[in-house]
Structures are given as C-alpha cells and as structure tokens.
Image (cartoon, rainbow, N blue to C red; front, side, top):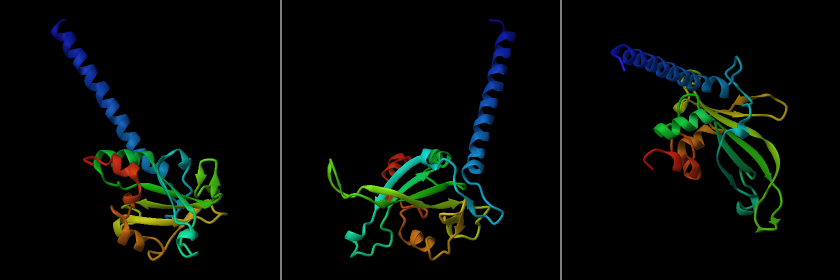
Length: 191
C-alpha cells in the first residue's frame, strides 16, 4: 500500500473516530435534558418512561412491622435514569443531572402460591430526587426532592425537612441510600 493511501486511510479513520466521539458526547449531554425536564419554577415534570430506566431496588416498611404506624407503609420501587447509571458505573459518583424516581405501590395480598409475604397492590404515585448543580446550587449536595400529587404533571419541591434531612443523615453515599440498592453497589467501580 502506498504512503498516500496509508495517510488517506489514517485521516479517514481519525475523522470517523472524532465523529463517533462527538455523537457519544452529544448523547451524554442530551441525557440531562431528556430525563430531567423542568418548569420555569425549577419543578420537575413527571419523568417520561421511567419504568424503562434502570431498576435499582424495592423496599417496603409495612405497618405490621412498625407498630401499626410506618412512616412509609407502601412499596418503593426505585429507578435511575440510564445516563446517570452509566456515569455511576464509570465513576462511582452521581453526576449533575441524575434523576432517581421512587414509585409507590400499596401493600396488596399477603399470600401467594409461593407462600406468605408482602406483595404489591396498586400504584400510588411517585416521588423523585434530582441532582443539578446549576438549578439547585444552594441545596445540600445540589439535590432537590419532589412530591407529585395525583392530579399534577409536575412535582413540587419539598422542604428540606421533608426528605433531604433524612437523606443527608442516613444515606450511604451522596444522599442516595445505596446501602439498600445492591444493583448500584454491584455496578460501582472497584467494588
């Protein structure tokens, strides 16, 4: 192969690689815009297709195990947006733009063909947390927490005492309860 052909092939390869890196960079940059859409008041619109995101875990604190008065007696099915999950796998950190959705489901039946237990009933709404250093620079860790009423397409920002204080005090990493999400622990680099 002539020197000219080798140079030409090298140049074409470099251009293609640069283009692919540019497309990948655009995809990462678009994740934040797509997954976290906000009102003019910085409230979070209900995330699109969150059930197709990465499912990181589920928990339930039933009334029966909490003297009949659990603070959160429903199941919490928790999802993280795919772009932020991929960032977590690479870095072990939650990036600015991370959206985590907690979908609530009532405790339904306590018996099934597999045995006795707690099984999910009906959906009861969602809550979410978003890390965004530009939108919430004064919030601890740049996290904002959102509660969604049944009749709204966006969630209102919660007072710090409602969610953030507990997350700050009890969450294992950066206000996220990774101690309860084996999917995140298994994906963290170096773990």
